[in-house]
Length: 99
Picture 1 (tube, helix red, strand yellow):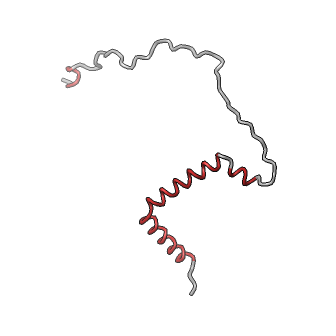
Picture 2 (tube, helix red, strand yellow; picture 1 turned 90 degrees about the vertical axis):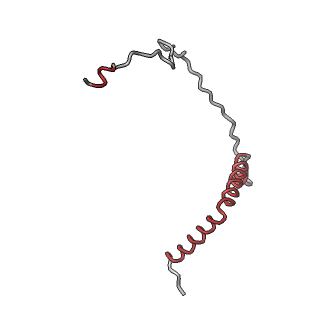
Picture 3 (spheres, helix red, strand yellow; picture 1 turned 90 degrees about the horizontal axis):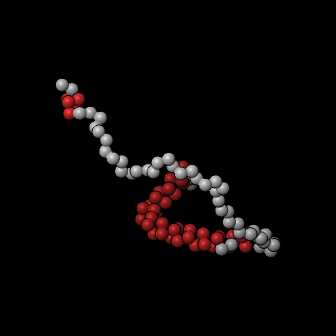
């Protein structure tokens, strides 16, 4: 019996759809914990040790870059008032009705 590509893929998609429907929350938590552990392993140099096994590991010194502005910022001409004083309304009661 030959199974063609689309029929085989449909069976795989149906299986994965049912798996996610039934166990999606558990799979999400497992993948989340696995991703955190993988990130910790990579940041501690596990991937570098695996790639350079038996070879000398190049030393990369840590670099911290700080941006220090040379000029002082110019002060604003007037301070910002978040609550400006109320102004006269743009219309009066007579103008609103149009009479």
